[in-house]
Length: 319
Image (cartoon, rainbow, N blue to C red; front, top):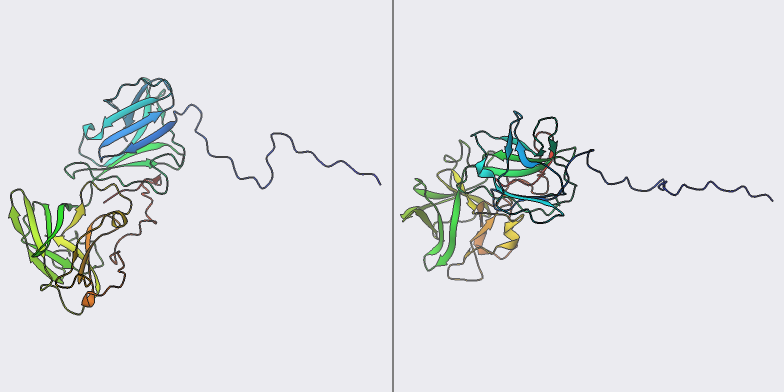
């Protein structure tokens, strides 16, 4: 019997069932080794060696060089650490991260590989910038190009402290003209919308001023009887948020006070951080010990929010 030789696969030919090769940068594009906004306003970048000025290019094509406060003393990388609050203007928008070589035709947009920080699945959240005026985010477009996005965060008040004393749970937060702290059930609209202040409250607590901040004390006698649900915590229609939050799931990482009253094993009110790091309260009927659901009914699904903007695949954006 004569055997015919089988077809040999070329050395550089991949098997038919081999996974596709990883995406690569467009020809001539600078490649980022790291990108992050770690404190809400400082952009950290590391690029593979490339000539030119690292900058941001706005929608009108104007280039804004990044003024770095770190020396470039590593021959393996170009590094920059720049304050995004230095960006001019007062409008929301996106900025391409570019390497500028003196002309529009010679500028190159930076490409960042998938999986490089800050785009892994367990990426940290970016907190609002100091003062709460801007929310910055890093975005990876469908082509893999790196962008900085500037937007306005949802109005909220920063929580400064949570503590338990003999009177109840003391909630200390930034100054506001609100006269009461309200626990309200989730509604069809966001609580910072027009219906927030008028939504019926499950419980209300007076707000007092102490120096440059406000304080409200949550107590058991003011809680409604026979309820078992999550309530949003509002002051003047605004939510209370975790200050400088960079945790993907603050509830799993931060232990918050319980209102236990005379029985330490029964807690009729339990404070929680929602997926978007705003304060919510779980009202438990009878102070039972069943494990609560830590998500308010209208809270966004953290797994489903990919921060997409303008058709781009992007980083997490905290509200």
